[in-house]
Image (cartoon, rainbow, N blue to C red; front, side, top):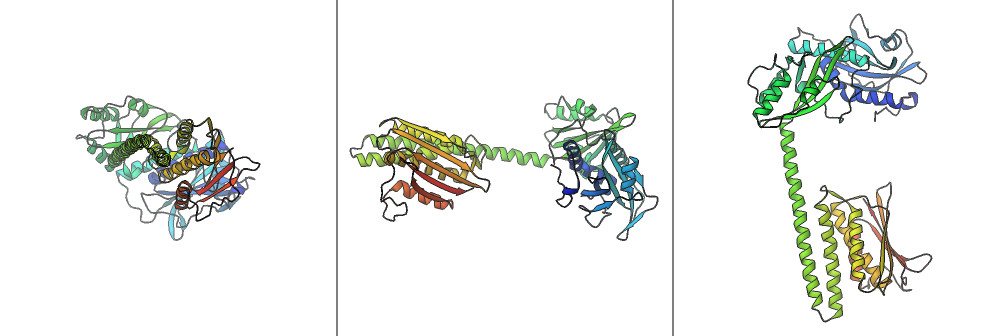
Length: 488
């Protein structure tokens, strides 16, 4: 969303369409600032059209700033002599006849109205530092020529392209490489950085004067990479586009913007960024991601093997107490295995815990089925939980569900409900509710002489997560509920 300063927000009323247009403009206007070597301030009219408010500002990365201070949040009262007011009323670009002195710096100032559907949605005020102006070269001339075309397009509501939706925040900077094409897609100008980028792709001949589509396609073919079949259409399209091209030697991201006048297409500007290092890092991340997932998968397999060994051992025990202890250990190992299985299938760092909770409830029901009929239900959603806390929570839920069956539902028949609630302040509350016999009258969760291993494990894990834990009787009875609160 377009960020309007809080002090200005009560004084302006931007419709959704207007806000979307201005947001797209400010996402791309670094191109305007860099090409024109200018500071740019975006002014929008107030609610009563008697005042204008500065809601955004940008400085060029290609030259010295003309405005030393940030003017965002400032207000211009209705003044017919002010260029912003003149541009807004006349719906035409206005320029000072003489350079304006700003903090001792001579500056060329222009005001460009932003016209969309015959309505002025704002004014771009350009401030160009004129101190120490020297004879411009080929690069500066082409930058300024392109800037004038784009400012005129912005004034007509054609820049940014209203028919193009793209990812925000990925547009290359002008200084990273600029290519100007004529209406036939032939390179009319290429900045030194753009030429270097194509050299890195494998080009050995001059870039200027070549058909950009043929040159790019041939480089991809020579490297054995598949040619982007949409490349020609993207470059000749009337809409903006982004293209990623790569060869064995390098990778390049192209931001393609058609240049138009009131008479039609006059060319194309291509802003490029070499992404070789970025792609290499992405490949490394993909490799690491696959490795992490494989590790989780192997850990899950090993834990399942341990669980199977515990099951075999339990079957050979003659002591009921030993059998029960081994079965409890098996359930804990299975709970951890479920977490690693989900981690092996999801993005590292976090898991959708609902899947884990549902699997744990199923395991609980399967274990209890040998003694009676158990109905398990999950209510609410856990959302995403960090991998670090997922294992702790899985063990906590396993222990609490097992405790509800063992002590609350001694017959193994009844209902256990797992309820999860997430709050806006980042807390997660979990309740394990049973409809069993309830709590003994002398039950005290904080009793230091308590011998329950399961509750001791739960208390320790929740303390590690800086959480709280208590067990209370249901109101009204029967049954009990274990309540866990942890910060996320």
